[in-house]
Length: 400
Ligand SMILES: Cc1ncc(C[n+]2csc(CCOP(=O)(O)OP(=O)(O)O)c2C)c(N)n1
Ligand SMILES: [Mg+2]
Image (tube, rainbow, N blue to C red; front, side, top):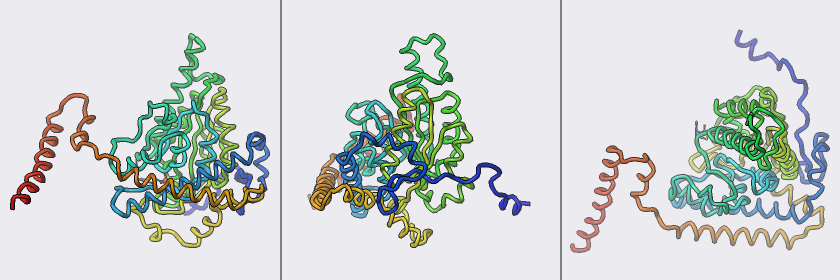
């Protein structure tokens, strides 16, 4: 019985369309049949923009590599590499407008930077210097919300936020009914939420789609399908391509080549504008690959075949955009300068991280409860005794 079920083909759907892409694996301009519908989103984008995107990707990778080294040297508690996933991140971040809100998972370093959160602040989180990260209410941080390690929680935060954007817009329009379920309300701003293939199995991520579809929130769901949820391959999590699941929830949904920043930009631009203008939520499955380890605590050679890794290395988003830029006439000087600048920036970030002051140990108790609590007090006192035991050792040592 169960074997029969396992062999049952999909009951509906037909063949999947080609993923949307403008650049082929080598980086030559060769749009897929599905790209035509989004091509006009690139009409105002020129070589200068593509050069900026290239710079974004290279600087993120240099930062990422530096942080992996810092973790190995004991300077960060953990690092979560984004190597290989910079293409869709940069395209989508560059497609967003300043007023949009972005809810990341924990691997969206390029997006943090583009929205204005300094890389040093991202690293400070992994050095254990802050409770949650940056100040989201500071406009300098570009409405980039906090990294969320509880898988899928950010989908709920994002859908709730997008519902608020919708209700605010209705209030501004003095709609007495404030019926958030009514489609067609322009909000002027949108929410974009990022999560991974494994996270699509969380209840939260599915509930978020139901609310988004029911209330027609101004929202774009982005799943970076990087092939793996730690050691679990995506094929184990879903018997159907992930973009199809969203169709079942009533969301417009497409699959893009996630290592092509042009595809990410074009589709992101269209879907974000649709959201802002009252045409409701949508879903993007970005096909990409996690070139590195899940985190610095993981060893992917234990569960991944090296051939798979190599085939994705050949589709590296940085190499592809470099090839495309060269066909536009961009030469060695630019690429050399970008690499040198990124390396110098990574070094500055390293120095910046190492010179950040450590917080007062006591501050870890500050936001546990809004009122004093005996258990928290007990732990605070224990820590105080523990800390002062070092002070007396040092004094004793000095006198001996
Ligand atoms: C609710 C919850 N369950 C389990 C975990 C442990 N965990 C951390 S990352 C991860 C895999 C996530 O995979 P995916 O969503 O594909 O994102 P990726 O890390 O590949 O970007 C798991 C199971 C967690 N952080 N939160
Ligand atoms: Mg994954």
